[in-house]
Amino acid sequence: MRAQWIAEAFYQEGVELWGWCGFDMIKDMLLPCRNRSKLPKEACTVLCALFPYRSPVARRNVSRYAVPPDYHAIVLPLLERVAQRLRKTFPEHSFVAFADNSPIPEVYAASVCGLGCVGDHGLLIHPEYGSWVFIGELVTDLFLPEIHREASGCLHCGACIKSCPSQALQSSGFHREQCLSHLTQKKGALSEKEEALIQKGTLVWGCDLCQEHCPMNRGVKRRGMEAFQRDLLPVVRLGQVGSLEGRAFCWRPPSVLERNLRLLERNERKSNP
Image (tube, rainbow, N blue to C red; front, side, top):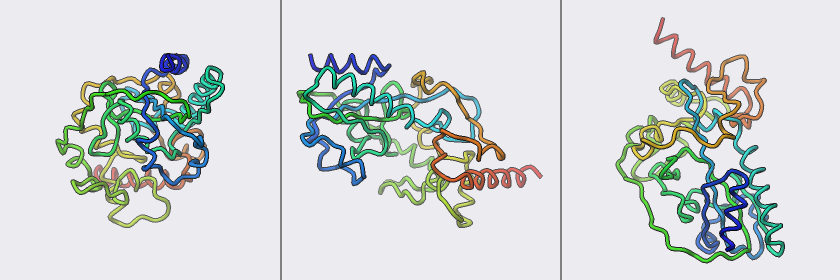
């Protein structure tokens, strides 16, 4: 019955993909972030929810997750509304919402909650929406019984590793400092090698190559939640960066995106003299 009430609270906010696991299953993996202090003192259950975001855009120069408005402004308020509903239903219990800036190891927790598997690229892969999902969670001191779930797994085919232009993905693990997505977000001057890597790609923010080449992303649903189908900005151009607000890349100063735009423009001029 408790699970049914929780499902209804999520459904009222348009969330269909959710699951739960015991807090004990992830408590030894908590991340050292500031929000860790917000966890309920008697945390018992983690409710994970997925928010599919893919938009069927034809042309873009930013990562798919950056095409819609910043998901933090959508997901966290939505989870807070779910939490408010649940506090009314279970007034003796607490519900704390997290999204991204979370002490919960989100990808692992979501997989334990039965929402998909962890790919070799480190991302969650849902059976219907692939890896094109945002993750959020509610941590509560409300008890829900554990249930057995059939685990699905990554194919370990090596497609993501082979597609990585900077060799950040290797069989030995993920090397973040080499990641092209990380480099497009890096402040300050770049080395010639780092500039060349950005010019090797087509995006001025992020890199989706490991996801685009993942066979588990083939045939998945091409359209996400309605909240992520509005106010799309697939192409960013010089001259408009400084005036943009509410986007995933706005946490960095405009100079970072402008630098990347100039690098790609310079590369295009070389290719088409």
